[in-house]
Length: 202
Image (cartoon, rainbow, N blue to C red; front, side):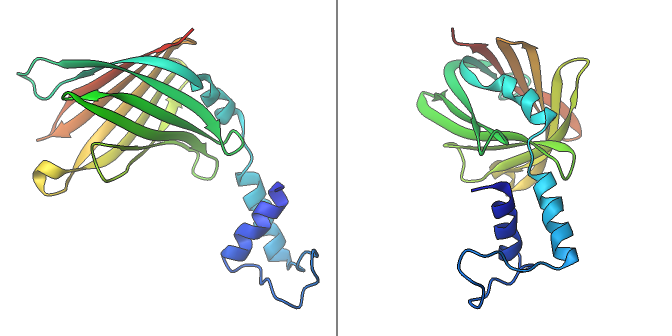
């Protein structure tokens, strides 16, 4: 399906273009000037750009080492695992399939990372076998340090769903190494709770 067709379908679903039975089979509906402008805006927003090419550096198969801190006075726990990052939807997003263990039990997660042309922000979403929710954060990229920084809020099941500010940092060390860090703010104090070291599989 071509971009113009996708945009037209999007507009139709949004109610901007009436798809009526009177239109001849295979013919495009007549668009007003406003509808044509809207379609052009959607087409522009849907095109992968330099930010998406940049994110493609994450694509591949990786081995992982996770370090988790349950509290300031608790020794960290470590696990190993694997991650596979693939481009999806025509290079617009990166999907990560993660496999590891947690507290002696199998653990798996699925995440997406991308760049939103409309908001001008990078985004990250995450779901895993340890919860029934989805975590979404947004952020920016610092080319000087090759670092993505995302911020969001996590619902804490130990505090009746109270929102916990979360900051995530992804540092692209080089083409074969990446470091992910997660920080949580509780009681006004931020602390690191997780680190994942990624090494590209040869």
